[in-house]
Image (cartoon, rainbow, N blue to C red; front, side):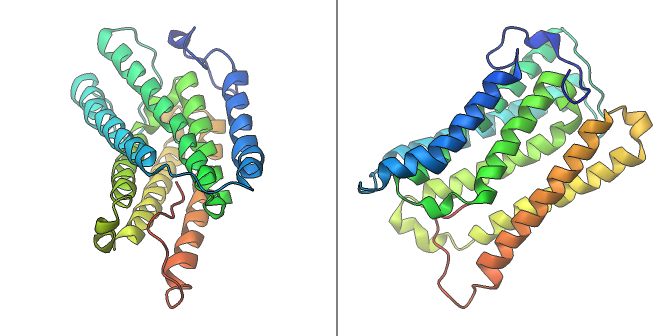
Length: 263
């Protein structure tokens, strides 16, 4: 058990699901590469021209997240009949439940691939974009996704995951368009992406209060509830600070570049 959580036996033998060592090793490697090895290797080199690679990556993210939201919502709410809040943990082995489990795993891999986004910053010598918020957000999404998936409690936060994936669709669409210079004058709405992320965390806070108020009916593990609340509050504060620093306090100074993002 991890943090008092059970383990979903259906995931036995799936890559990274048998032990925490695999995902923790990848996260540690991510930190070493984007904070130390990558910047050191690029120090005396010119920024790499990876525009087309970035464009393809963003397009793939848009397609992958869209597939997850559309097919996942259909399965969860249209076929299986999940509730929005207080959906209990269950490890059914019927065909539709197993399809949904595979879809959860697919989304976990999508969020794991977000690490590549940071690597692009390093290769383009945009190390200033590799902020604490950027790195922490990537890490916590991957680790929380792993814990929720492996424990079987991901059902309880599925609505939040769909909301997060929807924001990623818009976000990666924006950054794909930003690789086309002629599109940049039309990308005035970047700050609303950050606003959407802040609203997302406020919605998460509301859901958390409902879960705490009905904790006996929901049956969620206490460790999962309160660690999740603490993490959401921290992210809300970090994103709010980013918004204030970028769009309020610096409003009269240099306008933020269209490729600067935190996710």
